[in-house]
Length: 312
Image (cartoon, rainbow, N blue to C red; front, top):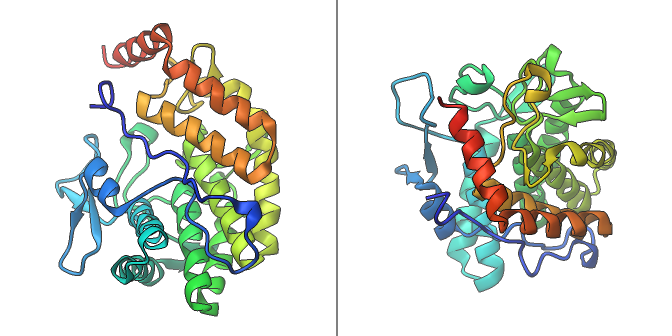
């Protein structure tokens, strides 16, 4: 389906981060909806109404579904966007139920508040219950909006604790990678590093949300730190006629892992989102470049031929 009809969510039309003041309502950057999340990711729902995700095909285990912090946060943000559009209190209830799940199912560890992923990822040599910068970033976006809605200082405390994992190196069990471009936040904290682009941006977006909506000084510091690195890395991710999904091949000398069409569109929309945050025309041009790439049949053929080569 990714080849024929790739998932795409676009940037929320009402997402104007520079027009809001501290503690004001703002939709999530990408235009997630609860119906869209269930449809595109085929999410299940438990008896309490909490969404569950099926394991990836290479998962090392016998169970079929799990509570994914990433998709639960995605769904919460979709419910919040729905609520801001239609003022339906039921959508706000969905948001709060998934927010509460995230707060109640975090673990407070030596390097901060963590949302562990109860799955495996053999591709990146990650065993059960790994941690991820994409989880941390998305949950920060949820916590920030939860604080706006109810002014619960516990959400601020949880968010500040969640920032700590982004200051601990991957080598020491955290999510911070020291690279030739600067410090980066890793979706998959493996060695050698993976440098997954979309996960890095989700983390940066969460840091900006948490700073913008709560006033967190540490979130702002980490955002500025990561943004500088991200800008330095963009020229490496953009591989000619198509974009890389990650940069692990730079360490392994393997075939570059080019993005699928879904991720190519996601990269484009994330760059438009980064432009909304930074007002830097550099990201607007990257947005346009990604769209030109995804519409280029030569790049499309090259990307999927490269993926086929990795399986043969």
